Length: 469
Ligand SMILES: [Fe+2]
Ligand SMILES: [Fe+2]
Image (tube, helix red, strand yellow):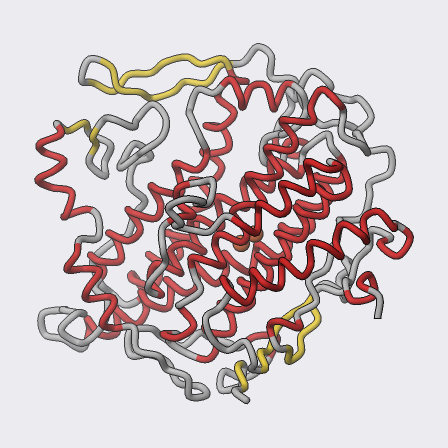
């Protein structure tokens, strides 16, 4: 079989010899990467997975048993929009580019490589989780996320191969050479070098870090470079499932925690073998703050350039904004000065990272509100919350300063003496780690997490989502 017959695609791969040749060389290295750095077990087993075989409603969610190395990683772009125009910046209203404009070649390559690097990185971070999955259902969801991140890597590599010639091919190889957490060749962004060693962290990652991915993709979906826009629009359909895994995963832990609290005379979930709400809050504080960092500096000339040149827009640029040039507006940024929080006016174009971060924060808040409803329904008097966006920052104007979760400034000494109240400490991590005992019998759940309300693709909860051979 020809390679292009094995790769489901809607980019006319069979007609494009040059692209075929590039992918023929890359694909064996991709498989080598998947075997080395992908899930540490279950590679020979049958997993009930969804595979995209086309972009229409019926074709993008085909469910069947596959062995992960046989997964059909395809190349799909959303259907082209007739006569699409650039939705933002100085070039607003110009015809969208089908080829890379020479003057934006380096910037676009950097954007694509940075996005592309996160996709395999998360697979590497999660590779040991399958051995401690809380249920067969969850194990399958982990693998679904992993193969789709693999497909997202294919999507970015397609752009590099199809539009960036030799240096694109070199970048595509390097995407397979870097490794999450590797001392010499780490992944580009820091958050993607943190190992994910327990399932509470996995759900936090898919809730908060994958959602950063969603907002980056939403900004790229507004790109004037049409192939990038179309690729990311299709990736967004898959990304929704990843955040579903995160939000409902934490929701199910919260539900179980509440049940265990109700069954304990001191409402002590840990004594009942569960994860207490205080620990859940600490994990939220950690993963949310590290994900908030991924949006980059609050005041950014890069962000201004990307917007001005039509490379990146705001999330839902066309639908949510009226002024797509954004030449004159300002953004009121809350920032520390003389020991107090004050505001500083920033030209809107320089604040584009912050505008995207705002949309991201609102989206997270809706998820936290849903968790709080679960707590309220259990008649427990407690609320989970997102910390201030200033809390625990390593990037941007708030880094190098110390804030409590309410965003009040602290001295370095106060921060040092109190940070264990707010972030997972060694004891918390050890407690979570010892809960991580695999549960892989059909329909069973680990003690610390509630069952989901329904199975995958209409299947019952005790369906054999992972069939060991
Ligand atoms: Fe992704
Ligand atoms: Fe994702």
